[in-house]
Amino acid sequence: DAGVIQSPRHEVTEMGQEVTLRCKPISGHNSLFWYRQTMMRGLELLIYFNNNVPIDDSGMPEDRFSAKMPNASFSTLKIQPSEPRDSAVYFCASSFRTGGNMRANVLTFGAGSRLTVL
Amino acid sequence: TQLLEQSPQFLSIQEGENLTVYCNSSSVFSSLQWYRQEPGEGPVLLVTVVTGGEVKKLKRLTFQFGDARKDSSLHITAAQPGDTGLYLCAGLTGTASKLTFGTGTRLQVTL
Image (cartoon, rainbow over all chains, first blue to last red; front, side, top):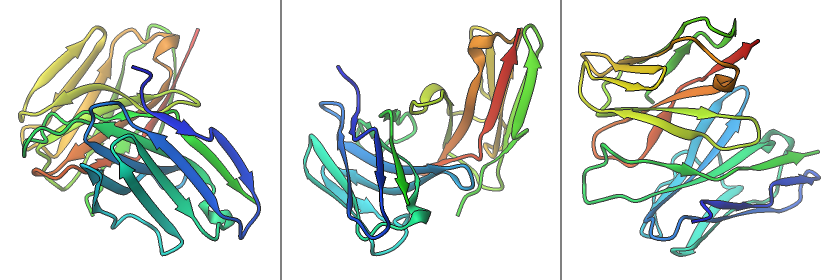
């Protein structure tokens, strides 16, 4: 398996532009997570999906951020309009959740998308 | 919000030394995981501890989950340059799917 695939790996854009980050989870995984990592705030959960359905988006900073998962093999995180404070590394991770027992949940992370907003 | 504080934040040691990294919280977790992250990559899972007081060993790494399931430690024996990286603990509460990550410990091991 190629693992979790994210694109682009790097993006530099200007303030006000729309940014779309993409993620292909591991085949067979039924949970998908979007995290943001900065030096100041560490690794923060933005949103996660179970079986393509958004479960918890309480970590999404504001209305400028939106995430979709149209099918089991693809998800997007969109920022519109982007601002310099959105600069960070955005990670996608996937896992396989079995029933209600999450104690052994294991996340596999992608390599991340480094976003710089000028 | 459950906070996971890690200490120390930064650690620079020489090859062969031992070290311990701590992960503390006021919240109880049903399980706790440790990840290592290298530059330009995502975190990679090292271990999951589930039972209070549990100790797991992974070669030179020893992980312990506190009796009250609020804290954990990672001990590395005879550190090597390949151990260099960002170490992250992450706690899972109840049956929720969301992991809360710690503040991280950046380790550098030099020759």
